[in-house]
Length: 258
Image (tube, rainbow, N blue to C red; front, side, top):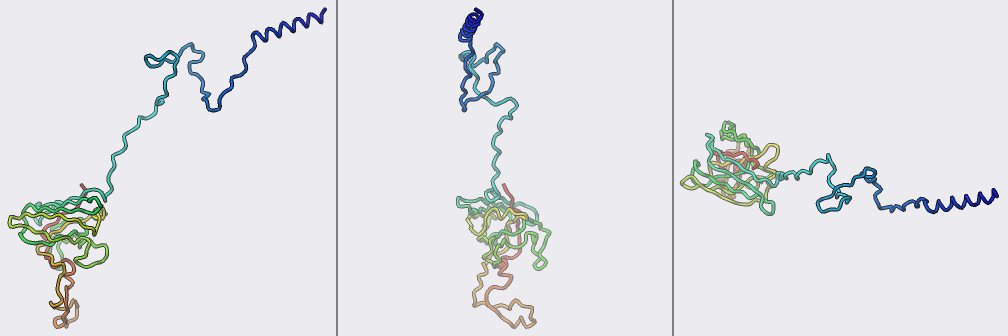
């Protein structure tokens, strides 16, 4: 009797397990997020945008406390791309013209000079010099020319005039004191003019002969030999090979970035 009672009890308990038994664990996909529902157990649902059924999760947004993205910084062109400018002044500090340099589509400097008045009419030697200092009180000890502070012509390869990188075409100024010229050079790049010690443009008093001294012209040899007055040579002398006998410096402008 007791054995039957035990069998009946076991059968009843088994039926209850079948009626109320726990469901098997959910199979989670390995790609699915297992993040917990923040509203679980609160009795609340996350409100969605208008027209969205209650309980629809909001689309992910920028987490609180995340800095707003900033606009990309403005690109500063490298010195080789930046336009350059110089105000050209005479020995009295009066502005007599301007120089503008910009790179053309091939990266070569396109140079424009404009003279607005105050310089003598005629052709003038016109060069870019190696230092960005235009001090009219700085004079050449050999010639007394002002603007000695601008140094010699820009020259990268130890060449003689007129093959310096800074040698430019002569500047023609009219009887009214004005003139202009534009040209492109491939002897230098704009970035080379904006280096640590800068550069300057100089207008000379006389035409630049490009050291074009034909061999038929003779002159005393460039030597300290006491017999030099009787020793002759041909072609350009040292002074001609410096600046084409273009004379003193009458105007100067420091070249700077725009």
